[in-house]
Picture 1 (cartoon, rainbow, N blue to C red):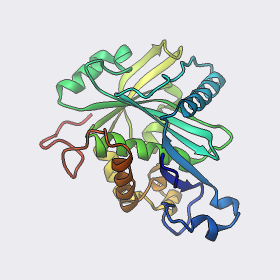
Picture 2: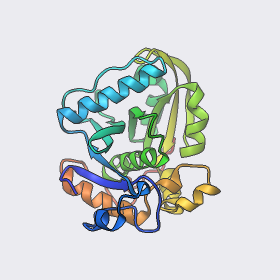
Picture 3: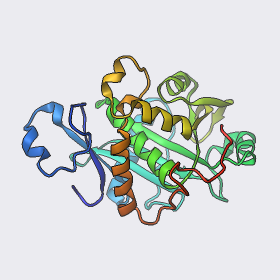
Picture 4: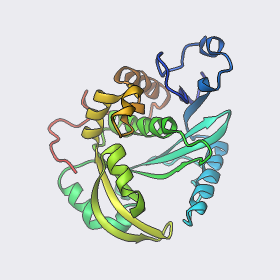
Amino acid sequence: MDGDTIIGVPFEPHLRSLLVDQPDFADTQGDDVSRRLFKIRSADSSGQRSSASILIDRMYARRGYLSTPLPQTQLPTRITLVASEHDETIGTITLGFDSPAGLHVDDLFAKETAALRDAGLKLCEFTKLAMDSVVRSRRVLASLFHVAYMYSHRMMGFDSLLIEVNPRHVRYYQRMLGFKVLGPQRLNRRVNAPAVLLCLDFAHAREQIARFGGKPEFSLVERSLYPDFFSVAEEASIIGRLRRTQPDAAYAHGPAGLPPGTQARC
């Protein structure tokens, strides 16, 4: 596997492990289209970041949103992940970690975020989510989100995730990932579109991953994205790779991924 690749994943579910670190994987799977792979990387190079920005701009423009390019280099409090097939970016998401500079969601929802901080929660946000409309793969979205969860919660110890979404998409995020509405509809001037503040308690995500992760057959009865997530064992392997390839990350304080004594929830 390439040195900058966090994980390689088949587009379609199959009976063997989702992890494809095995060197003989390509040789044993042949050219079957169902064995196509995509890779998830941290967008550390200027080329990867430019490609992610192009995808964001294209997908936002289709919905009438404004967009701004990613910074040329990763910032200490912002990590961009990309999913790619044959070096073509097909999905991207940016993780933002709370700091004295705050979060993007503070611009519209300062009252709500202040209440969460006062309750002792460690906040992060996911922004600039874009998926290639041609690919339309649940697995790409689920894998990107799961790796972002691992980085934010399991490695860095953040316990609450905030996102701003168009009101039309609120039900989707509630049903598919378990988000809750925290703030009313307001105009997000960064994208020139209405936005609603949603919050996901990472403890809920962890429970769902333990129950459904790595079990794509459950997608027939479980309407969420969690059956398309990695299994608990696969998650542990990916976290191990993240720790080797992302040595500057501030790791979580304990096996639960949360500081001792954390009780508050969004």
